[in-house]
Length: 326
Image (cartoon, rainbow, N blue to C red; front, side, top):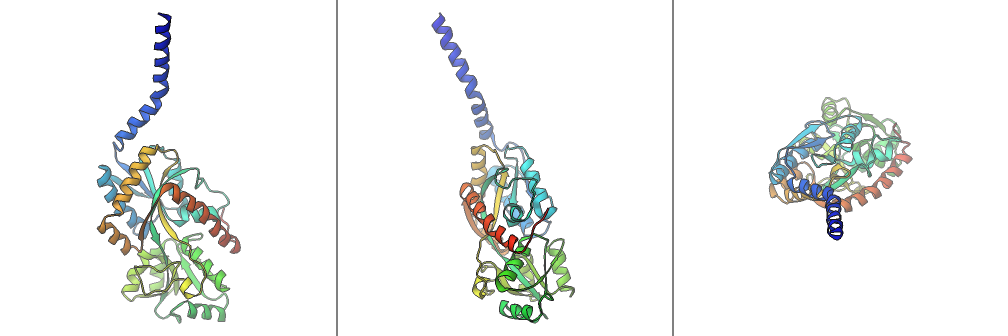
């Protein structure tokens, strides 16, 4: 009798010990059982916003749940990113991060409201993009050689705009200044739409913008492209890259999907599977190319290691530019 009771007790204890894992597995098996929220820390209408809406629609079909997009703009993308870091780790909040949110912000901000490594699960890389160096049609330069000569002839007088201090556009401008030995004036704008509008209005002649924003203006002949930072883009294949024009810098600029840290692996795998499958759709590949994004899926753990490496490279750029934000 005692042996029977002891065996029963052991079985009950074992069952209790396994219950959390079993419950977690059951929850993961039911995932997703409700709509998923995708936070986009970018302004509506920009490249990151359009990317999120394309992937949200496609991934929703595969997960058989709606994915609704929320634009949470502010503090160079860190506001929306912080919201994701603080969200429940249940797979019902995901985000798309650009270079700023998880690589450039850690390189520039002395204090971030989130840890870009510890507070996130990396779902996977979506693809790679570049930044367009745009100029008005009356600007007296047609490539980086001309631009560099002009800037050296008039130190400190040449301005360029970006969509904010610490943005990828700002960093690409700093790389150009550092590698070419230039003294440039950076003018931050509240978004690329405002920047391009001011370029068309004749208020500023040079701007660094994302491919999705700038490419239509180049193709329509309303603005011209001097270069792409950092790698040549299939969206504007005739525009040479930084490295091709003598600027020795070719870091990859990537779009990556994230979730809060602690999301169960089966749930992460489900999201990653939907992402990877969506990126294989020819229609999605075409739409992303129109946004200046070359599809290049990289699994989460591998991309996390790449992020950690890239932070150190861009941190050096920030230090050399004395670019530090509080």
